Length: 535
Ligand code: ADP
Image (cartoon, rainbow, N blue to C red; front, side, top):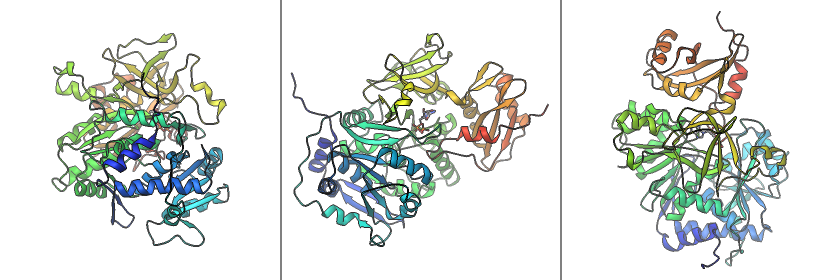
């Protein structure tokens, strides 16, 4: 038998501090300057934060909220809070203040760490929440205004003596709320064990191959699903980490990628589509690190985007994940037995959401049980595994997302092909029901974005007097001459049956998105619910 040694974040922090003290962590601050320090500083400060929290009376399982951008102090909170037996509760700073107040109250957060630049946002819901202590990180100025407590002084308040509490691996380490695109935000508690196993899973060579030799820049906000676990994996292997701060425009990011020779980044397609455009219109302007790779998830990565980045020597790895199953759950890479696939077949495969990682069990359920792996039959994806949520936080009425035999029902409709590759067809609520036949909005969007004049496409179901629902396409042009509806129809009919092709194509300046960068289909459907179809 082996020792009973709990899988917690403590050994990850300890190893990073002891073995990789000289490795750098770089953060871009608001005004563009770069803050640089090393793992040795990070280690000391994360422990100082833990000591300060203990000194402030933090009890086991107490929630400490963060309202912060992507930078070193947030990484300190990623470790300092959980190793002190607290729960890191990352707040989504793109939410409405009303939702933030709801979430802070629902989570019963006790402390808050907030960026000075985000104080105006905090002020908008401060009166609606009751927090015992608010600590301000000064990134844009020397000192917090008024009576606010300064993060640096707070770090100094715990004294030099710090010893870790005894933690069990199934204790909660972090709390994240879904963005609430489909109803009230729901909280998911991540255990230490889930985060540790997730860090291992991400680092596998056949997964994202996160290595000590990488330079890692998460583009996913640190408030979103633990940035898909990437900061935990990066710290576990002692990789150099870069944080972008608050600015996400493609040129700033590309400059940072070039300057720090970033080798790995992760984010949602929206960001990458804009970045690809910047690369295409400025050939040779940025010298990216050889072997640079991007993990893309959150919504479907169009095949044209995967091909586009490849032209610039950037490898895109497409995956699927959700707040309830952090970090990424599936990744789409060809198997060793697929070398005979043509280029086109390989790209089509890579645009699927892919294969589940080790320890994750998936099945697709139709009306009469599990659907066959034929790449055609649709079913709802259900999941089981050591980092799949078992319940929402304090929300017994939402337990219906778990089946009687213990699987989590994801709400995504998929097909699974004979090789086991999962393809997301739609969210259950976004599928289009045209006279009893189902149409996948994602397939249409993928095809539309491959058109040379289209940058973005969202297809939604709109009520129809005869067919119940019909697809309507919202498009953003990329500046090339706009095709007519007839041309687009013809273009799509190369791939789709006549009845699957949208009945209307509307060009817009932009398409409404949620706080996590997905098309806000529920809102869009509402907006177009009275659309008058031409007879
Ligand atoms: P929320 O549920 O609050 O919108 P999540 O980030 O948890 O936020 O969203 C997870 C959902 O995002 C998945 O259930 C799925 O519908 C969608 N999604 C994630 N990755 C992909 C992908 N690669 N392709 C298509 N859809 C995706």
